[in-house]
Picture: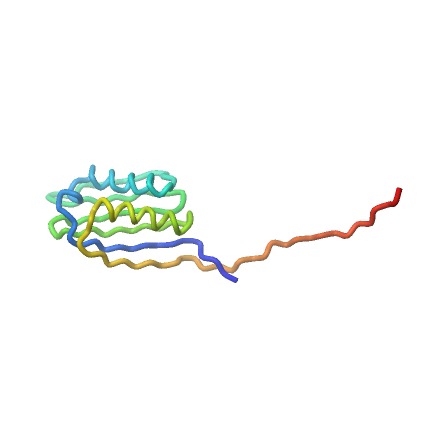
Length: 133
């Protein structure tokens, strides 16, 4: 028997409004909102404003990471959500991002990462005899 350690969603978002992805403050707010909405645990973050357009950012999570890189002049954002905190949290973070950015087209790849064997927990039951009193 095997289990998957993490779920990784890579999404290319097309047709995103320029103003939603041009400024680093908006990109930061987007990722911070996704982390909160999904119930993920932030460790640290780093964001950068490009000139004349675009921004990038990453939030390091206890569960892994979430990142964005934008080309507002093309209406394009590349999103990366990878968590080991349960599949539902990964999908919930992406759901939030899609609700906020409202892309016209989404190309999404979902990959299960880290397939490892599940070891049965050893159980030891010792038979003991009770004395009759």
